[in-house]
Image (cartoon, rainbow, N blue to C red; front, side):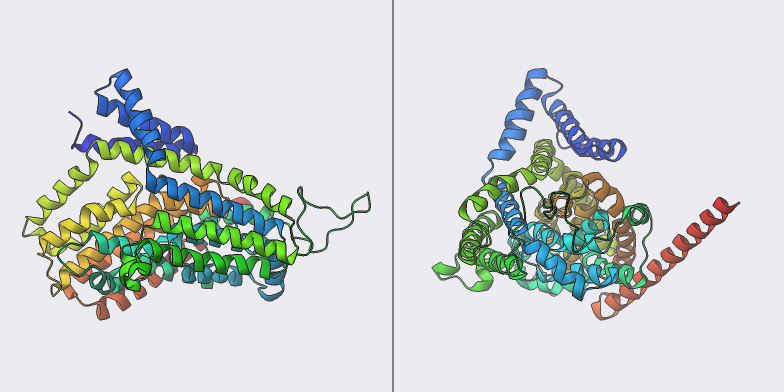
Length: 518
């Protein structure tokens, strides 16, 4: 009755609406899951319980791919705790305070690091967060803004990097055409990803925010206290130390070395899972890579090497290293719980046939000759809504890309097909940014140690701004069909829109100040 209908999209809509209204994510996700179970079972109590618990929660947690991601999360949490205990993060904070002296410099450094770690979005979110958090805290950047910078350099960077787990996923969804060639040709048309980078740079250069992010930054500035690099001795005569204490022997190398090892290990793990050591080429190995297995292999290897490095350099002893591992696990429990509920909600929408319902809409649109001239803009919008509802970019790729390829017969000479594929990827990433149940958004909150709903609510206006600009650009590109023209125009248009937003934001602030004075 409710399968393959509009009702298949209602459970995630309920969860998202409740999360934004109540500012509480756990109960909102659970209510969405239960509502999906009720629709699937025809409002049968026993049927709902079985579907929610067995097919939803247990099924999601026991899925091999999801288990691999959870292992990666736990190991990364342990590594972050080890780096903190070894004094690597504190040493980097001291170094950055000496060399990066401005708030804009701290933001730019975060953006650059996020762009450099383009292998995988999960890896990006947690690594950039753990490395840059001390620096952004010292310069008074709010955790909400840090979460936005992390999120905006995770999926948007991965989706335009030919050597990434995302490129491999997209290539795998393309049948009847060269997936990697199509991916590379689609990069200049991926307006949402490219313009998100432009937006971050403009916001940093112009030093302004708007919407809820502006409020979050202002509140953070009001409560900001300049950190004292040399805390005074306590009444007992000893320096104040966190519990457990951070090693005083820590240096920047104790942060940099584990991160470099982690990156190298994850790359090797990804290509190993893709068959590189069995004769596959590097590109083919990345295309065939299993991110879950590759990241698990890489992170576990990096953890072992990091522990050995800390023991050899004597910043931590063996007992201290072992004590840090369960503490790292505990730090990841909120992210793991949200991910488990998000995966379970996705299972509900899948069982209700959300993908088939959306696929039918796209196929019907594609049969309409009049609408075909705007197909790329429609694909972008549909991709946004599907990603918001399901919380997954990759699932959106899996639904829309094969349909678009079939509509155009896999003809790589048709530029409109390349634009439409890019619109699908851009829409998926945009929806991923807007959705509270997106795993990447959850990871960005965890990496920044920011309240999840605060991150979603502060990022949403920024994501919607670029979404609106991207939609205009896709309509425009449908007529010119040339990225040499479309991309520069889209960048200029984005800058103009952001400058207007700055003027509006500044005008609103001045009006508020005048009202206060009166």
